[in-house]
Image 1 (tube, rainbow, N blue to C red):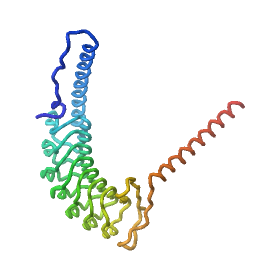
Image 2 (image 1 turned 90 degrees about the horizontal axis):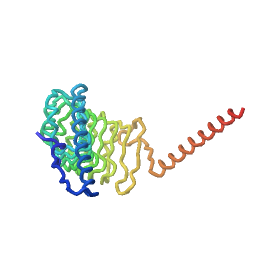
Image 3 (image 1 turned 30 degrees about the vertical axis):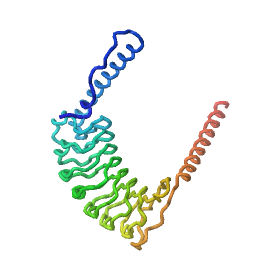
Image 4 (image 1 turned 120 degrees about the vertical axis):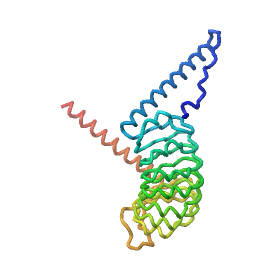
Length: 283
């Protein structure tokens, strides 16, 4: 079994017999490389040891390419696995033996597809597949009926299957920065949904059935604009299910203005406090 740490070239750099600047540079480079490998292995062992106790495994930024480290074979149960910011092109098969897993974070990898045996993780509540290279969604994804949070943002997905209706426990659904041109009306089946982000897509018309949801936050900025507006929906629901309540939209300009106003106010308070302290000292 291999992992990203063991996939790198560990061959020893050639060292010149000359004792000039080039020779010193090569020797320093070799020493730094050796130190980095030692630090990586030590860090990996520490993370696995912690996971055995906490049941939460964090292998973020470990440069994993296609499998998990062999050290996790001794762990029988995990509640959460974080594989953020690695180089994975597929979900490691070793991961699927943790059938009681509740949280899986694969954000910012290089996933091209979701394996069919994802359905074996039937207890998943939080699944983050954002910032990968996904283009399609398999039916098995929509058998995860316990999901409460699903992040599919920043991929190349163009179709959201009608099977999304099966994820009735969803509270947070992130679909921004994809290639959606339309959304299925079956989204109205997600009665627990509170937050929906479909901004930066190619959607022309939103389904009228979205008005049936008691959304607290809906982000659906105009994808033809390079600027992404932040849209917030108040936590009340319209008596007319076909008409969404008013929304407050903050563009980058108003957010920037708010920042400067707050900064100016804080600076003014600091000056007043400093002036007051100086007056007391003089007395």
